[in-house]
Image 1 (tube, rainbow, N blue to C red):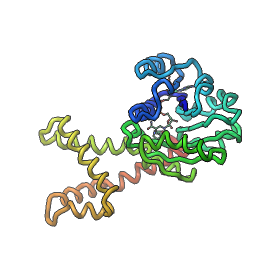
Image 2 (spheres, rainbow, N blue to C red):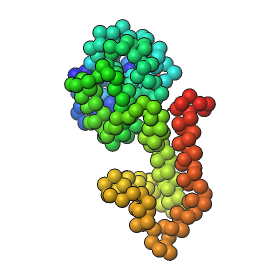
Image 3 (cartoon, rainbow, N blue to C red):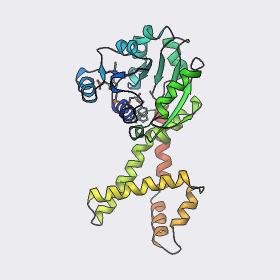
Image 4 (tube, helix red, strand yellow):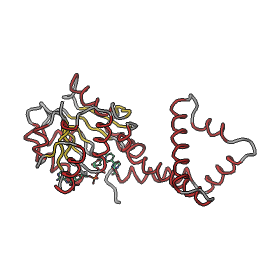
Length: 267
Ligand SMILES: NC(=O)C1=CN([C@@H]2O[C@H](COP(=O)(O)OP(=O)(O)OC[C@H]3O[C@@H](n4cnc5c(N)ncnc54)[C@H](OP(=O)(O)O)[C@@H]3O)[C@@H](O)[C@H]2O)C=CC1
Ligand SMILES: O=C(O)[C@@H]1CCC=N1
C-alpha cells in the first residue's frame, strides 16, 4: 500500500513523521509534492521519501491520496487531480478543515471513496486525536486501510460532519492553546527563578500527567481538582485567583472564536 501527500506543510509533516516512527509505511512508499520545489524536495530527501514533480504524479503513484493543502487552494487541487481519481480505485483522504465530503465528491466524482479527517499535530508523537467521516463508497478493507493511517498515530473518533467545527476547535486547534497554557505556567516558574528549560519540562510533565489522570481514572476533572485543592491550602487560593482573572470564560471565548472562524467568519 502506497500513500501520497499533496502539500507537505506543518500538518502533513506531523502525520508523515508519526507514520515513519510507527513504521506504518516504509519511507520509499511515501510520495510527496507541494507548491514550491524548495520546500518539498529537501524534506523528501531528508526522510528518504519519493518526491514527484506534480500533484497529479502524487495521485498516480498512491493508493491513498492525502490532500494536505491550505483550504484556499484545496478545491483547485482536487480539480487538478480529479482525472487520476476518476476510476474510483484510489482512496482520497482529506485533512482540510471545513471541506465537506459532498463538496469533494462534487469535484472528484461520487464513485470515489473519500475519508474526511481532522487530525491534530500530536500525531507526530503517536498521541493524535483525529475525527473521521467516510462517504458511502469507502467500506470494508478499503475503509480499514484508510483508518489504519490514523489509528497507528493516535486515537480516532467517528463524527457527524456538522460536528467537525467544534472538534477542530477542541482537538485540532487546542494543542496551540494547551501549549499556550504550558508556556504560561513555565513563565510563572521563570518569574520565581527556575530556568525556562526546567520550568517548561516541569509544566509539560504536569500537563501530560493530568491528561492521563482524566483519561485513566474514573473521576471527572472537577473531582480531580477537589483532590488536589487541600482545605485552606495553596491550590484553592490559586484556583480562585485564576477564576477571578476569568480563566474559564477566556477559554470558552477562545473556542467560540475558533468555531466562528472555522465556519467562514472573519479573522
Ligand atoms: N496545522 C494543523 O494543526 C492542522 C491543519 N489542518 C489542515 O491541514 C491543512 C494544511 O495545514 P498546515 O499544514 O497547517 O498548512 P501549511 O501552510 O503548513 O502547509 C500547506 C501546504 O500546502 C502546500 N500547497 C499550497 N498550494 C499548493 C498547491 N497548489 N499544490 C500543492 N501544494 C500546495 C504548501 O506548499 P509549499 O510549502 O511548497 O508552499 C504547503 O506544503 C489545512 O487545510 C488545515 O486546515 C487540519 C488539522 C490540524
Ligand atoms: O488553524 C487552522 O486553521 C487549522 C485547523 C485546525 C488546526 N489548524
